[in-house]
Amino acid sequence: MAVNNQQKVIVAAIAAATIAAGAAIWVFSGAPSKQDARVGEHAEKAHGDEDVVKLSDEQIKLSGIKLGQAQAGVVRVGAEFQGEVRFDADRTAQVVPRVAGVIELVKADLGQQVKKGDVLAVISSPELSGQRAALLAARERASAARATHAREKQLWEQKISAQQDFLAAQQQLREAEIELRNAEHRLLAIGAGPTRAEGLSRYEIRAPFDGTIVEKSLALGETVAADAKVFVISNLSKVWVEFHVPAQDIEKVGVGASASVKASGSDAAVEGKVRHVGSLLGADTRSATARIAMANPGGAWRPGLFVSVRVLSEQREVPVAVLNTALQNVGDKVCVFVRTGEGFKAQPVKIGRTDGAVSEVLGGLSAGAEYAVENSFVLKAELGKGSAEHSH
Image (cartoon, rainbow, N blue to C red; front, side, top):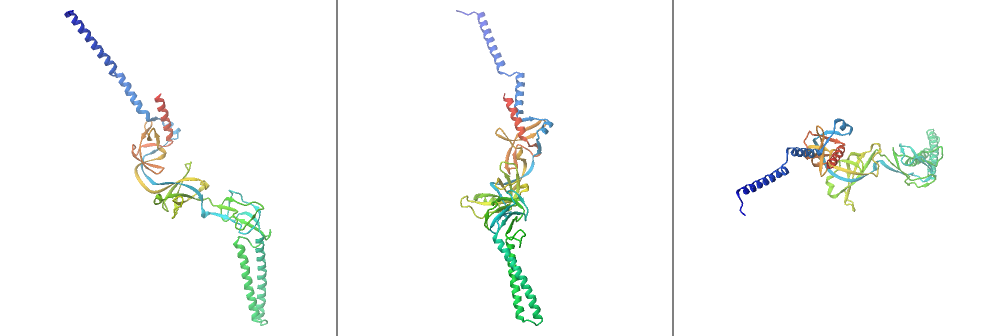
């Protein structure tokens, strides 16, 4: 059927209208409006603020957050070992009776603090009784010999007796005095006095120095040998820390090196010096035993306590350093919470060398920046709550 000119015009108009409508639909569905653009900008800003914790000065104070400045510092490089606190062998003694006998009295208890000369226990000793009796006899003989010597000397000087009688008396006096000194020294060697009003057999075991009773191995009425270990006393004002150094780390540990000792499961730490490194390797462990001598104020470092030992082999100055207490893991990044006008920002940093207390900052933080030194975990917790709220 033939199409006239009027019909052609109508078809063209419908097609143009269809194309215009499609374009309008594309414009409204694909092109963002000014309002949509503003919403997107706000969303980006909100997303960028997710690493910021807003806190007022009062809130910071109440949270116990301490501030510090990133600055140049010294990182002490070293190696870490596991060790154990032990008694200082130079200040520890095994107390033995030195005479055999029966325990009559026990005055010291386990854990008791004692002073040098304090009586720990009393023994009744037949052996001691014999030695004291021998001393008394020696005294009597010496006294008689001195009297005889004085008499013979006077008679000889008066030409009444022969010189040989005087010389014989002099010889007897010398022998009696030697016997007396020997009897006295035998008692002194075992720490016993010459005689006791309570009896010749009474012997007092006394503390050799100030310290603590750390072992006790006797009971009332028990018979003990002269070499029996009845007490162990240790002066705990100083202790040793012993640790094993593998062969590959021997060069890192030298006598005189500074070391930091930290108690396992605690923040307690103390500084000391390496006093000894064994010259032989253990057959089983293939390691050398090293020792640190350190002060023990208040007896806080108890023998038997497991510790970690960090021996410092060198010190290096770094341009920017932060305290390790400020480092927090946020997501998969190590961050420092930097002070801002509104609160704190979790700033990712790149960490270099560390000595367990101070870490070198290789990037992400400049010298002079103010950051949270203590209680930064509070900020991490607040940041985590903010992220959870944003995700919902």
